[in-house]
Image 1 (cartoon, helix red, strand yellow):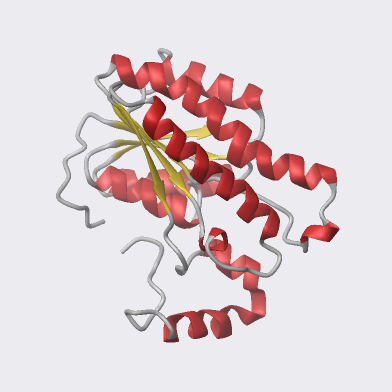
Image 2: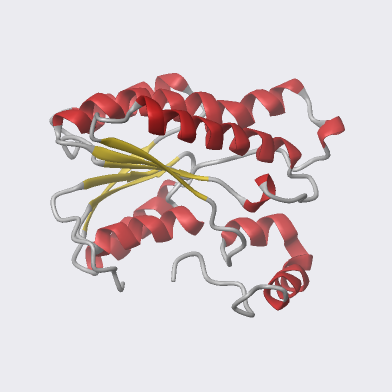
Length: 229
């Protein structure tokens, strides 16, 4: 794994939803920069173990832990482990990457779909941030990184509900930037746009190559990038 020039040795980085796709690549990248990566999964433990093994094989350090960002109790248990004797001992970087929704037109969304989508991207993120900030302050500062998506910038078929939740996250990032000023903790929003990953492949199905081809043809760089380059 090729890392960037930033040295994160001794830093502890948690990436939610990092058993596959962009989250997995982000965890690998942070580990390649020296961070202790905490790979989290909701259901697919085997995939998370594979990511951690890749990190270890490259000389990095990784932990694997179950985390349901849509359940407050799961988040609380995760942070108890994180700061406890069995965990890595703290947190310096928190990447809120996990997301889930029902890909349907808004008029077809049921209340439980709305609750689950916002539970992960809004309630869950804020609960995690509430736990992160005091730990990060004790360690001299830290970063809250929120991953949004292109559907908050332009129309995406069946993406209305997820876009609404991600847009709410973007607003919270801006408020946290002000509210956390002077604490040593910084809130950062990232909107990576289109990229090759498991998520788009699952969403677009047999139309994946066609849609990505069109996006690449209109991109300033003439192609769609991989999840992490």
